[in-house]
Amino acid sequence: MNDVVAIEQLRVVQAKLMSSCMTFTKYFFKKRYGRSFVVNSHHEIICDALDKVIRGDIKKLCISIAPRYGKTELAVKNFIALGLAHNPSSKFIHLSYSQSLAFDNSESARDFVGSEDFNTIFPYVEISKTSASKNKWHTTRGGGVYATATGGQITGFGAGEVDREIFENLPEQTKVFAGAIIIDDALKPDDALSDLKRQRVNERFETTIRSRTNSRETPIIVIGQRLHSNDLIGYLKETEEEEWTFIDIPCITVDEYGNEHALWEFKQTLAELNQIRQIDENIFETQYQQNPQDLVGKLLPLQSLQFYNFDNIPISSIVFKFAVGDPANTGGDYYSIPFMHVAIIEGKLLCFVKGIIHSKEGIEIINEKLIDKSREHFIEEVFLEVNGIGAAAFMLLKRDMSNNTKVKPFTVTMPKEARILSNSEFIKKHFIFDENYQKDVEYSRFINHVTSYEREGQNTHKKDAIDSLASAANILKIKYKSLLYG
Image 1 (cartoon, rainbow, N blue to C red):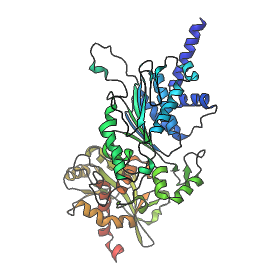
Image 2: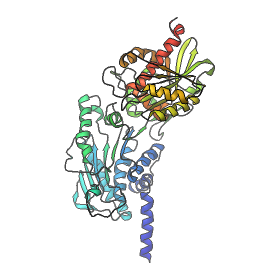
Image 3: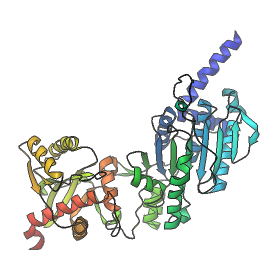
C-alpha cells in the first residue's frame, strides 16, 4: 500500500514539474545550486514560449535578448532536461558559434539529467553508459543530445522523431514532444561586421541545419543577442517573418508615461545601462535593445528619426488629420498606412505619426482596420494610391467609410526609389514617431522596415513603409507649400 501511495505521490510531483518550464527551472535550480532562481518578467516570457514549443503550439521560435540574462540556462540546459522528462526518446541538436560553448552546454545538460535529484523524480530517464561524451550522449530510450559549432559536422544526426505517418500498421498516438534543434548565439560577436561570415552562418542554416529535423513537427529554437540586421535572426525575419514567432526583449523598456525602466535591476540598473549606451549607442541598440541599426548604407537609420511621447502633443496646435494608404500590389508586399496629425508649432510644420497599419492581410480586412483606426484618430482625409490594385481598395473604402472622413485617390508617376530618396530629408525633419512604438506589433514592424531601407540594394518588401511616408510628404508639400517654402 505504501508503495502505491509513493508512486502516486511521485506522479503528482512529476506532473507538477512538467507543467511549466518555470516551475521545472525554479525547483531544480534550487537543488543544483543551493539558491533560488531570481525570476524576472523576461524569464516568464521565455518560459511561456518554451512551454508552447513543448505543447507543439510553436514550431519555429526566435528569442533575442542580451547576454547573461539567463537565456542559456532556460532555453538550453533546462529545456533539454524538461524535454527528456516529457519523453526520454527526445533527440536534440544543440549548436553555438563556439564548439567549446556548445560542448559545455551539452555537458551541463548531461550532468543535470544524470544527477541524483533529477533521477529521483524521473527514474525512467537514464543516460547510456556507452555514449556519454560532451558532444554526444544518449538515453537508454534512444534520446539524447548532439552538440557542435554552427559550422561543425552534423550530417548523420537528426533532431526530433521521424514522422509516424510514413510507417504502416502503427497505432495512432497522441502528439508528444520529441526533441528540437536549439541554436544559442549562432554568430560570434567579433564576426558580426563580416558580410562573409554572417552569410556563411545563414547559408549553413539553409543548406545543412534546417534539414536535420527528423519531422516537420520538430521545432527549431534560435536564441541570442542581436549583432547585426542580417544576423541569423535578422535573416529569418527578412525571409520568413510570417512563419516564425519572434520575441525581442530589450534591456530598457518605456512605460505608458514615457519613463524608462531597466528590464532586470538585479542584473543591470538603468544607470548602468545608460552608461553602456553613452559609450557606444549603436552597440547598445543592437546587443542590448535587440534593435540592430547598421548605419552604413541605411537611408533612414533609427538615430536619424525623431521620437516623442505622444501624450504631450499640444492638441491646440493640430491643424490637419490624415492617412495615406499604399495597397500591396504584388505577393509579399505590405499594405502600409500611417495615420497622422499635423501640427504647426512656432511656425514649424510637424507631422505626428499616431498609428500604423502595416500588414499583408487582404483588402477587406485591412479596410475594416482602416475604418476603425480612422475613427480612433479622428482622421479627416484618407489618401489612397490607386495604381494597380489600389483602385479596387479605393472603391471598397469609399463605399464603407463614414461621411466624416473623405477618401481621396492619388496616382504617382515617379519611380518608387526616386520618390523615397527625394523625400528622405523631409521625413527626418518634419515627421515625429511614437517613442512607445515597440508596444504595437505593426508600428514596430513599420519602423523596422523604414530604418532598414538601404540606399542601394533590392530592399525586398522594405519599400512599402517608407514609400507611404514619402507619399505623405508629397501631400504635405502641396498642402502647406506657403508655410514650407514661403
